Length: 238
Image (tube, rainbow, N blue to C red; front, side, top):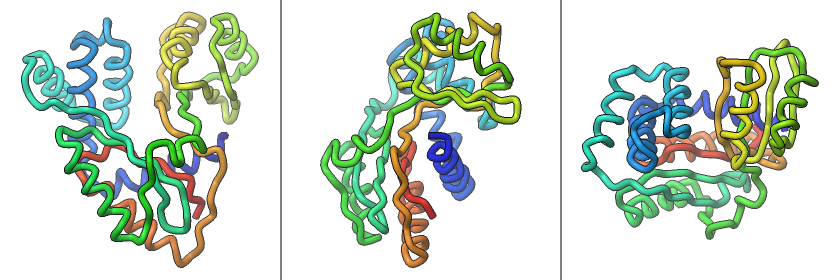
């Protein structure tokens, strides 16, 4: 699982560097999260985790505060999540997560990205079963046994744990996210998580040929040009 996560992390860095939309995407996600679960991070754990991730990605404070203030006002856009699945260049499996105020427009825009790169958008569930929806927590610690014991005592359903270069990486089902964070905080105090995310991790990799790499990059660029796209997950191995 570690290699799959590393592949995904490289992909995220690449697409984020290629686009100047990180702030707006975080702003939209924070707005939706605050509007759904409350604007107080102490009472909305999802919002607190999202704000922490935004800060780690160097999102300015005023962007975060503006999104929360917008949610506090009660008006504004009515965004809803949308997920699309399909097969990209070279047959790689792809999941596209969006937040949209117009599902018909977003579906048309995402489908066009598939069409322009000679790919095929699928039906819901067509590829998601080949990914694990997992939370990933990475933090400084060199005692893997103590970390595992803390999680087991809290009855967290850990799927994998890795220790490398004085860092621990915990993988668990996405439904265990808050429970895992709380168990680690209870056992070790406040933790500065280097990675604190919920992702779709591919169960296997699909190698793509040299001829497909350029088209796959174009495919990712087209998706990331769309304002509604929040995250793109795939199993392509260059």
